[in-house]
Image 1 (cartoon, rainbow, N blue to C red):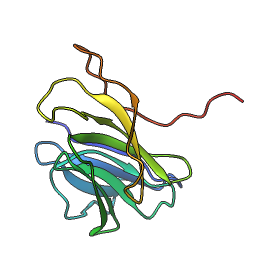
Image 2 (image 1 turned 45 degrees about the horizontal axis):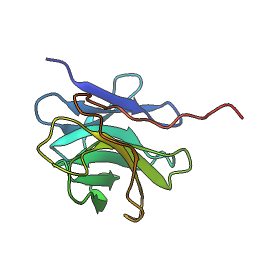
Image 3 (image 1 turned 180 degrees about the vertical axis):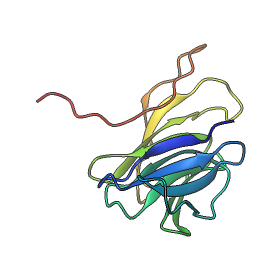
Image 4 (image 1 turned 90 degrees about the vertical axis):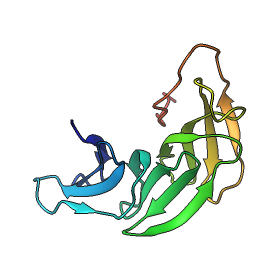
Length: 142
């Protein structure tokens, strides 16, 4: 089995990834040295915050956690499962796959929430029979 890459730090020196099977959040230097666990397991999706010091991870399906070795902040996503969270370029909001209606359903919407836990907003509704996942922020042409 293979581990699951989350992404490179903003300065490109480290990679955050998930251990396959356990969802353990780990960081390794880009040259392959310094592999270490952050002590967080059960994550589904992981990414760097723009500050390069913090990590965002969907944990237990309902949390988005920021960590710098330990969980520094948790945001509960009410009434559903939050997966594959990614921060906005300015670090003020997260986008993630989310089921706002039925946490046991197979189909996800795309939602955003502020890093302070406010402003949960569905931006792409659930489409029956369509699994929407892997949301990310992209700059649009000006």
